[in-house]
Image 1 (cartoon, rainbow, N blue to C red):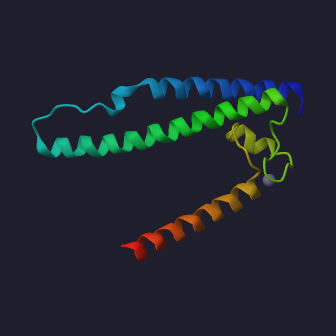
Image 2 (cartoon, rainbow, N blue to C red):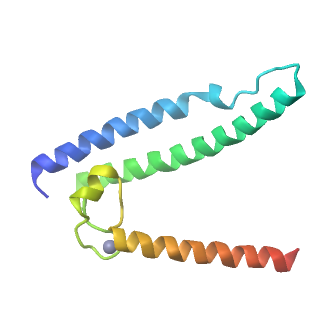
Length: 127
Ligand SMILES: [Zn+2]
C-alpha cells in the first residue's frame, strides 16, 4: 500500500482510538443516579443497560483499532486476514480497522449467526 494511503488510515485510526479512549474513560455513563420517581429509575436503568452495551462495543472497537495500528506497523495492513486479498480502499475509508474483505466478513458473520442459533438451541434443550 502506498505510503500516503497508510498515513491517511493511520491518522483516521489514531483519531478513532483517541475518541474511544475518551468515551471509555467517561464512567458517568454508567453511574446510577438517584431519583424519587420509580418510572424514572426504570428509564435510567434501561439507559444504563444501553450504555453498558455501548461501552462493551467501544472497548471491543478500541481493540480492533489498536490491532489495525499494529498491522500498519508490521506492513500487513489493508490485507484480509482470512484470504489475504487486499481490502477495497472504499471499505477502509469507512472502516479503517477492518480485518476482512467484504466477502470474508459476510461469510464470518453468517458462521457467527449459525453459532448463535446453535447456542440458542442448546439453551432451549437445556431449559
Ligand atoms: Zn477476504
